[in-house]
Length: 225
Image (cartoon, rainbow, N blue to C red):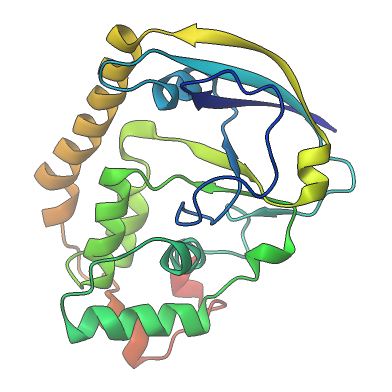
């Protein structure tokens, strides 16, 4: 199967380099892409810097792809991967305990895969995850918050084998004036809806991290589906 992917950058990248990049991204070291041309243009620009949406084709046949959207995984698996790579603010004993519990019970051996598909934790979405481990919002609210602003999914190349199978097909320019404004609008919309609606909309029966830990819930618990 051939998949079309896009990567937003300030440069044209004809050959992604295995082992190059930032280790503290959502899923660790890798080449971060999206299936959305528009999203790549947003990711590729800065406040006063134009960018590019690089287009690629990836031959997925034979690759081991971890899709964190599949039914066997919950949003807590995604959060456990995030906790392994991003620096979270853990101002309380509860947050520290939650971090340790999620890493112990919901850890995924994501480094064993050639590629990963899952949420992208930009600034606003990362703050939603922090609210959950701090006990501010429920599991249901976290799930709903991840869809605010329609940030979309990212496709991350992890292994040397995956890098060998990707081919650059061209690039499109992205003007900062248009695409940075779109990026900021998306982020503000997500934050506005979160703080005005989702963050304060507690419902009877909501699961919070304290109950998940107290009851020692495991990944197969139906309440986490």
